[in-house]
Length: 477
Image (tube, rainbow, N blue to C red):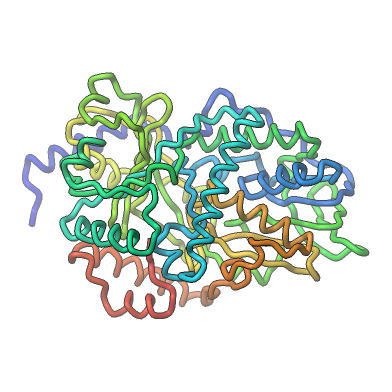
């Protein structure tokens, strides 16, 4: 059906809302951004070398020093701490270690109780570490509402909540009908919701990364920025990593590079990069805030396969992201992919359909970045070089909280320790690797098309998606 003149006019208004949007991540423009640490220009030796200055590497370095203050730790970052996914995400810090309870229950039904308990404990420990180290990152444990925007989604949420109650997994999770969910956040598109009251916190993601860096330095971690790790080789009883102007010799190495090519080549086939995009509005006025409610400041996400995530910032802007997930042929990661105007225009239209009462609000920032995903949509772990090297990767966009758990797993593995973490099937087993091109790109493109088709047809999954489900490759969260 051709759009009416009125709808074309609304579309033009939505496009106009982007006219002042800066193509940079809102979080990374914060005036509190610290100066980078100097690059490595000599040969260093240490007990533990951490490669990567995102959440994965930062938590590994911090937890290593808190476990053993005498451990000599060095951290290398190829650019600046927090510049990639850790400083560009939505700031949802979830307790889930499995990329959502549905995904975890489908893959590890016998361990899901333990995984949920470990996830809650991990979020508690993140909150405690933020307080202990005085990290100012706008932490708010306000929870998250998964909202239905179609009638079939409302039925599915109600059925899912009943299933969680039957399995004893519904603690802290409340079903909201249309009136109840709109009382929390007022959108004419909301038909139901599931409110996880304590399982998710909101925070400023870049401030968390910068605060973790400061905490690491305060404990004696030597941090080198603008120092990419170029190669990893055996050196005596340990390992050596070469950098552009120096090198590091270490007894043990933890790799927290996630989307970037692993120094262990055999790990690379397990992840592919997917680009995600977000918009940030200007600060809302008192009247604009009142028009949407949102007094409890929860994070929100809708229930479609191609979903949106949205939340309030500390200065009452709305971050609105998701929907498009772009995989480029060959798994390329390039700076020019960080901006995608056609996705921004699409997101702006979706935003005003969700909140028509905010017509006239403008977007101040629009940005994107790469997420590492694996075929099971949650982190995997392993070691190399006879246990001298450990890695964690594959967080699939839910790494703000789970990376701290992954850091502890890597440290356990490097220590050769038998712990409740290392005994998990999730830790002991790996996902299926992705096939080589052109099969990877073709499979991902077909899956994306099928998911969009399911959203348009009442959630019904076609033959391709059902086959992926049977292989354990279905999108479950």
